[in-house]
Amino acid sequence: MYPNFSGASFGRTSHARKNKPHRTQVFFRIIFTLVLFIGISATPLWAQLPAISHLSTIQTAEPMGKGGYSTSFGILQYSKVDLLPDLKQKVDIGGFEESHRVTLEIETFLVPVRFTYGLSDELDLLLGGTFSTGGAGVRKVVHDFYNTATETADNPNINRRVYDQPLFDGVIGLKYNIKPDRNDNLPSISIGGDAQFGFTADDRLNSDNEFLDHSPADGFPFLGINTYLVGTQRIGSLFKVHAGVGVFLTSKALKTTDSFTLNWQVGGEIAVSDNMWLVADFSRELPYAGVHVTNLIGFAFRYEISNTLAFQLGFNSQPGFLFNLTFGGEKAQSIDEGNLLF
Image 1 (cartoon, rainbow, N blue to C red):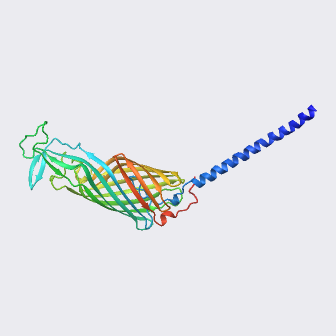
Image 2: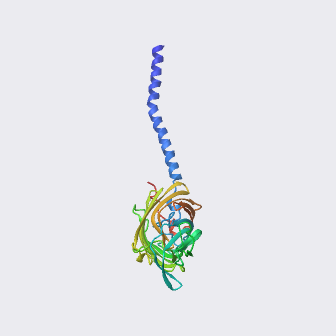
Image 3: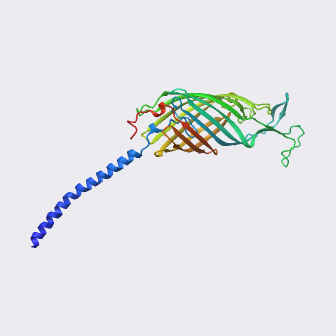
């Protein structure tokens, strides 16, 4: 009985050992199939996302699409109190020039407002403006206004005149997509430019360490031209990276030591769910109302309400926040989905 029992047990054991690898393989195949199916189903498709003309602070290469539009506004805290030259300079007050020590103080909030509209599948129109509000404001201080030399360190406010400075601009620009995203693993590329005009502050001194505007009472009008080249690279269906370079020329900068500045920007976005994206970007320098905000870091999240509507809320290092509402155009939603996955 024992040999027969042992033989039967051995047979059943051998059969179980032969089936165990097969069952294990089937089990892992089922798990892998389920994970792959869930991953593909849950992976957000960029074709469903309205085109985003800019991240938290920087432009992207993506056009809005014909009929698409985007509205954004924000608040940036801006302060500059280090322009305190000790030397006297000419000051024009009421048509008379005198020699005084002049300082500039900026402690305000910049409010940029932008509206982008898709004129065609490749061309976007930008309209906007920047205003300043709150804080101590923007002002020039003419020290020892009556030239009586009564100002002392104990009473710095005696015998000085303060002039509030206007700080605002209007913006109009175009962006053209010279190379669209065709799912060819090559970046989308756009060129653009905008004109800014308004009143600004003397936030930079010339080579003689003097302010450009000798009349502190009426502000400083300016005209600026901003040109840029920007690229957007899609990596699979979950990532996008953006980078750009540009030059901002202004009538004010032509008289300062640095006649122009080459600005560069980088940013990226990643999908974290079916309808939410995280965004981050860095700008070396951005002009708002003629003043220059440098080393600006922005973070934001974007939520897709529908296949055509998305909103974005971001915060930056200035500090401040930016809000964007985007309605996608026609072509912005119709890209080939065949190569969206890795």
